Structure formats: structure tokens, C-alpha cells
Length: 580
Image (cartoon, rainbow, N blue to C red; front, side, top):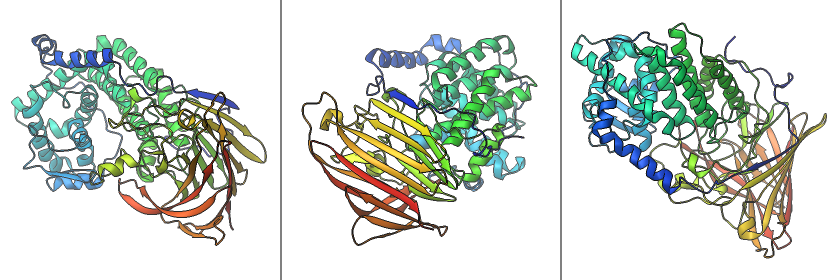
């Protein structure tokens, strides 16, 4: 049976490490000067006659096989294409007026266009006869603008990798023309792109970009005539790319749930290429896919959708279920991702997720979030405590300042000291100094599950460590928490400041604070009621927002427990308990 999660009350496949220390080595450093120069020179070689010679070779007359696309596309985007509009995350362009030589769109829209993911959307809603004219029209536009000119972003390695997967899987839409010159141009451009990423794939950034480039390279080797002798070479390159991009526990180095879904889809699509050739995929591909899915399920709530972490948000429960089913992996959610850093506590109908690791290192990701020790909590279909999410997945209409604000510590359900981020956020999108070390201890018993974690993100500026202790009872009806600010060892200067512990509430949760400023009653959309109570700080209710699966913002509320943090530190206790 393919793609169904195994119930969590069965014996878990992952063991629990009681103690763990995660370090962010070189986390605030981007690419070195030498690395930036190397990348720049590599791109400059694209314009040289030597690179042009490398792209020459035999013109393929046809593909060896046409793999299936195992995934459904976006229905709304597909219908928009049939109506003559290319749409992505609130950004639209009329096909009749689109000018690829003068791009006036966002980076996300450009990647959607150049990566040809729109082919999947189109084929999901249209018959072959309906879809072919639209696909061929856009293909001709792209070929005229980019087939003969090697430049970014069109010829970026990861986009070529994705393009190869989409062009081959949807070959009937782009190769049905009776125009033999056009057909030959498509196939020749495909072969040129494969030769291009043969040298560029392993230079792509670690994570989903490198894996995308390598998957395209392997697919081209299997589907373009003459590639079989190189199969072992490209598979070895793919293995190296996976080892550099995915932790042993199955999480990706960018610590991004959105990238996790992307990686599952990339490897599943590549597996379909092997199926089309009636070849067995390498064992490491299937093993990695299994780990990816287990880690992905580990950050899903009880509504079977993703939490809001590292700039992303919900994926859509139905869409995510289709991705998992297509992967063919049947596994249980990973409770403890030792290197990826997400912790999962599940009991009864409740799930709590914790970001128990430093942020991703600057060189691996743009748009990372300062979310260390943030939590999310759900009960059945309802989300009680969330993070705002959406910094990298919001619609184009979101103001830039708001998108950047969604990356801050204050946009996550954790403690904020001195109205500052636990890890600095630079203007260029990278993360700077802050959390370098997270210590975590987890214990399981018949009565409860307990996590105690601390980070050093505020030590340099304030001399204080943040320690968070979380306990979930074995029936899932109560969560107890304690947030403590402790003077850090060897710190001579302790900077007194104010703190705020934020608990962003799920969309539709109604909140009624008590008169004493110490508690609030939470009414969930599904009718459930939970009570929040705290000590050691003053409780207030403030406005917040949450980004949904479509990238759109919704007004919500947040509970804020605030107080003073003197030189000796501070201690706040809180409890979240089901009222009935």
C-alpha cells in the first residue's frame, strides 16, 4: 500500500535521544569571497565559446520513454492558463502580452515560469487537445528568448533540472506538433540543457536546488538516447548531492518544510523515470525518500497539514496527502529529528511541535527565520497555537516590510527579549549572529512527555540564556510550560530588559481574557475549549496574523505574557489545558 501514514500509537520506528546539543557552525557567515568569485567566474564561462562547444552534441530524434507525472497540479492555476493567464501566488500575466525578454515579475514567478511547473497545472485540468496549444505557445516563447542564450535565471542549474523533469513527463503536450523544426528544436534544447547541468549541477546550492539539478541530470541520462553508459556516474553524483543536502534523520539542511515537500516530489518524479525505463532505482534513492516522508509527517498537525516553520505555512491537507500517497512510502511520523531539529509530542488528539535547533546557516538559505524554541499546538482539526508563517510563501501583494517581519522572533510563538531577534536578520535576507547552540533533553514516561531546551541567542547582547521546558500529559489534555531567563556562565555584564512570550493563536480561535490578567479562555472553531493560565508576567491579548496555504494573510490574535528581566533573570510558568 502506498503513501499512508501509520498510526502514532503503534511502536515508533525512531528512538528518543534523551540529550542532544546542536551547534550552528559558521551559521552567520555566507559564502566566502573565494566561493563568491568562483561562482561568478563559473557563470562568466557560460558566455565563452568553450562552453558553447560543450553544449554541442548529437541531436536526439526522440525520447527513449515518457515517464508519468505522479502529482496533481493546481486547479485554479490550470484554469487560468486555459483562459490565457499565467498566475502564481497572486501575480498574473496575460499570455498574449508576456515578454520574456523584459521580465517584470518576482523571483517566485520567474521560477514558476522557467521551471515549467505550469505544465503540471495545465495537464491537471485540460485534455491533451485543450492543453497542447497553450503549452506549445509558451514553449515557443521560451525557446525564442532563451534556447540559444545561456543566462540566468533561465539556465540556472536547478531550473534546468526541474525543466527536464517536466518536459519529459509532459512530452505529449510539447512534442505533439507536426512542425518538425519546432520538435527538433525542443529536443535539441533539452539535450543542450542536460550537457549544461552536467557541469553545473554539483555547483548548485545544497538542498533542494542541488537535488533538483541532479535529478534532472539523471533523468536526462535515462531518457535521452546515448546516456546509459553514464548512468553509474550520474547516480554517484546524485548520492553525493543527497548526502550534502539531507540529514541522516531525513530533514533538509535548509530546515524548511516547503523544501521537504519539494524534495519528496523530486525523488518521486525521478523514481517514475526509472519505472518508465523498467529499471530498478538505486537503493539509496528509495531509502532517502522513506526518510524524507517520515520527517515530513513529523511536522504535520492532527489536520494532516504542515506547521508554519522557516518562512512556509500549510501546504493544503488534500494536496499534501496526494504527495505522500504518490511517494509510495508508508511510515510513521518521526517524533525526534535529531539533526533537522524538530521535536514532536503527540498524545490523544493533541500535537505539539517544537523548533529545537539553531536556524539554518546563512550560506544555505535566504529568508530563514529566527524561530528557535518556538512551538505550535493543535487539537484534532483545530490549531491552537501557531507561528505566523508565510515569509517565503505569501502572495505577491504582501508588503515587503510585512514579509520581512514574518521572519522575526516576534512572529513566532516563543520568548522575545528586548524586542529583538534571537538571531539577527540581515538586510540581504541572510541570518547573522545569534543562536549558535541549542541544548535539548527529552524524556518519555507513562504519565507524560517532557522536553527541556535552551538557546544562547541573547547571551551576547543581554547575558541571558533562554530555557524552555514543555510537558505534555499522556492523554494530550494538558501542556505545561516554563520559560526561564538565566544569567549565562562567564558573563560579567547582565543587561536588564523587558521580555514578551508570544503565543500566536490559530485562525478562528476566539479568546476571552480574565479580569485578573493571568488567564484566558480559548474557543476553537470546532467547538473545543482550552484554558491558558500564566504566572510570572502580565497577560494581554494583541492582534496577530496567520498566512494560510494559499499564501493569504488572516487576522488572528496572540496571547502575550510580558514582564521585566532583571540581572538575575526571570521565570514564567504557563499551562494550556482542555476546559472540557
